[in-house]
Image (cartoon, rainbow over all chains, first blue to last red; front, top):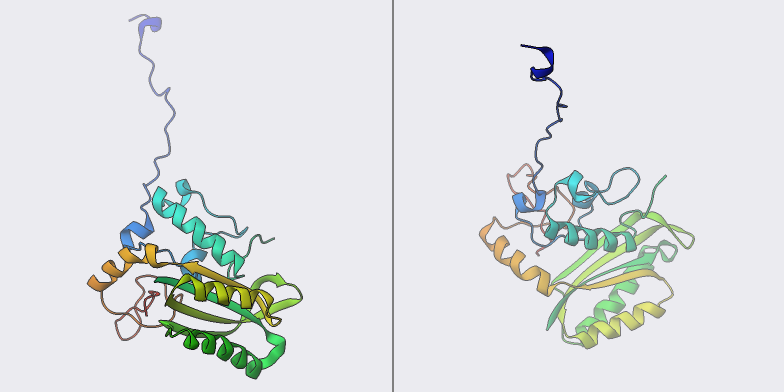
Length: 85
Length: 134
């Protein structure tokens, strides 16, 4: 076969397939995200004390909203920092 | 009747006796209104995540009350003007808690203050006590 009619192979990029993360709250059946439960909330704020986005933590939309509220309340009570260096 | 979580932070300068007296004052006010706290936890001295005023540490106390909004408004007003109280937060939780109560009833009974264990973590007795339910 002439080279121009040959099919190209190995031209597509191989995408890194990440294992789909599950919502921790759905798995543990936690409906009420307690703002006083610092150990639970600390898992969702890394070093800089920012709230982890859903795409990273794997939280579902409902629990992400509850988690956000809980973290913000905990910050007001100085159980969690607003920002850290 | 509504359920509230009330957490407040006292200044460490007043000492343990002063903190106990301040908490007793609020307890007395709650009793006078004919309410018994569902939860009355003293967390003690704890390091703050950031400085509040000139304080690096505070004495935490937690009440869970089932009462009407008038008592909560009165407590809020008193705490706002209290000298030794550096911060307080009252959150209404009865609506959020209804479903959790149903789920908890199906699970094993747990004891202990919140945050003592990670969810699902078991202690040496084989029980887990991480839920906020009293």
